[in-house]
Amino acid sequence: GAVVSQHPSWVICKSGTSVKIECRSLDFQATTMFWYRQFPKQSLMLMATSNEGSKATYEQGVEKDKFLINHASLTLSTLTVTSAHPEDSSFYICSAKTGDTGTEAFFGQGTRLTVV
Amino acid sequence: AQSVTQLDSQVPVFEEAPVELRCNYSSSVSVYLFWYVQYPNQGLQLLLKYLSGSTLVKGINGFEAEFNKSQTSFHLRKPSVHISDTAEYFCAVSDQLGGSEKLVFGKGTKLTVNP
Image (cartoon, rainbow over all chains, first blue to last red; front, side, top):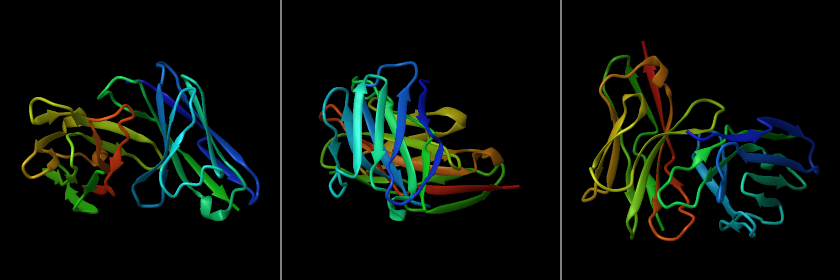
């Protein structure tokens, strides 16, 4: 299957700083990318959907000013956690798919963010 | 809006035993259905999906699932499990309308295969 690479796989940052997570589709053009957050032993919660070249669509309750999403090209989307707090510590996962209906969404390996 | 219920949070089984992981969904529109597997500290890997056609879907690693529209279920089965099947399994749905097809996940079922 297609490969989605997420970087970094883990990061530790201090409270108040910002951290950027990259999601790249390595061998296909991702019209749509999704960002999820996963708390320990819980399911994936969709944070936002981003389409290349347009603003991301955020799910209810997700602060768009805190979680900045940029989908600047068909192979790259970034999630920036601004002014991070310990409660932002979580596992963040991206997925990417083409625009064809019913096609599989491919997932990155996830990023473990720890805010200290 | 869709929702997914995975009835069992944990399922322990012995190696070579059969297993069924249950999934029920709720939706007012037609849906696509998926099962994903997640190993520790990793992303998700697609096991199988139902888009249309035959209600019995075969996936990777010997897994299969059956779509039952009347019962709104999509249970995952494997006739004989291996130690390596130990992982978290997520059922997910997406609606067939619109372009983004975002996935709604269940809470997951942790499958533990014991020797």
